Length: 206
Length: 153
Ligand code: FES
Ligand code: FES
Image (tube, rainbow over the protein chains, first blue to last red):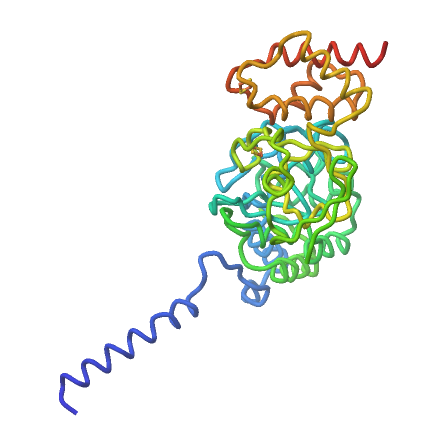
């Protein structure tokens, strides 16, 4: 084989290897899994570190936008105020009479006819109650809030795990429709982290 | 598969793609052009219809999602609230160019159906998604108040 041919085949090999390398590299939008924290010997510190990883999801716009501190949701990847200027409207957080969430948000995401963007949807589309607001809060504050049954929808930690791992409106965060960045990782990974956090004592980061 | 629903009290069927926006079906297939296309992205309210009696933007409503349901457009809307809103609109000469107005009227009727005696704040919240480029907002608000009084009288 002439050096030129070797050079070409090496080049072809490199070109083929590139997509594989991209897949194998740590994903920018990924989540670490509980085993990645095994090296932290101190159980409390391990728990807090796992929660910090969960925080990548909790503080993502897909989650914060509907856990706002005011009565108006946020939208898009920058957390802009929702347009139009809709409000919580009622205790269920389904909007004001005449302009409910369901005036625009249907049972599933709907791509715009323009081909650019979509209106998000889910059968239970609504705002999180105001006591579950975490827009602008530190991870520690969110963590304390999630454990506080007066501010977490009266959930036990087991119920919180169930919510994070399986609730389908939470799951929408990983399937948000065209024009929105999905929450990091997968809901299953988020659920596994939640379980590991609880199993290590549900400690909060400093 | 055809999608069957009720349009202004009549059974209708649409056999095009199930993700066709309801607005297209109403205007193009059914020929009811009172419902307007403004933005196509749920930002203006011009396409507002009632879906089982509640306000709904037809531009972001795949026709498949209204199967078996009742759709009402500006051409078919009836009842005490509807009559009161129409009368108040005419009395105050609310429209300017008129393009947004069937959406405004449908949203106003939807509001009064859901809340008979709306406050200024209720009106602002309900109508926040209906844009009027002619800025007829002051007359719209007054007309809704007049209509609410007329229904209550
Ligand atoms: S055309 Fe539907 S909201 Fe503008
Ligand atoms: S009357 Fe012209 S846009 Fe409203």
